[in-house]
Image (cartoon, rainbow, N blue to C red):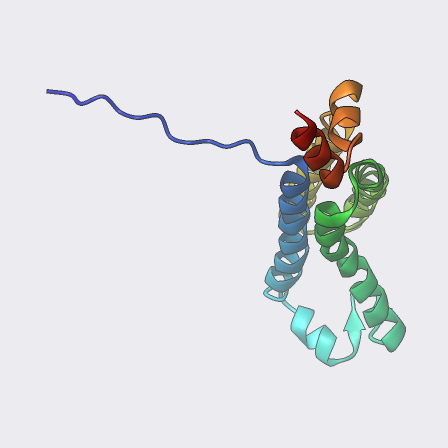
Length: 162
């Protein structure tokens, strides 16, 4: 005898939370692609010798890496805290700029399968961010105006007058 199954609760996730989760995923992809790349033959030896890719390890290089990594990290916070209009614009601009940057990471790299998969996943997440930001839900003007037309104290006065 079968018992009826209840439907699982599936509450709507706010756009801000979805976008912040996507930026978090991008941040982890950046970090893990770099960490896994340490297993490539010669990478650690080159780092110990003071070279990363074609660059000499320097304060400027490491600061550049930090700034590039800080972008998705800050976008997690900004996506959750900025007002909707600024949030939408910021995500559209930053995600659009990050797509060519992601592609740059695979140029000239002989391990195209490894880096290509990492870049593909990053670009997919960036496109999802662009879609969510572009299609950000809008509220009806009358609902938005009605909700902010009176203060709480004015609502109490109106209620007492009834």
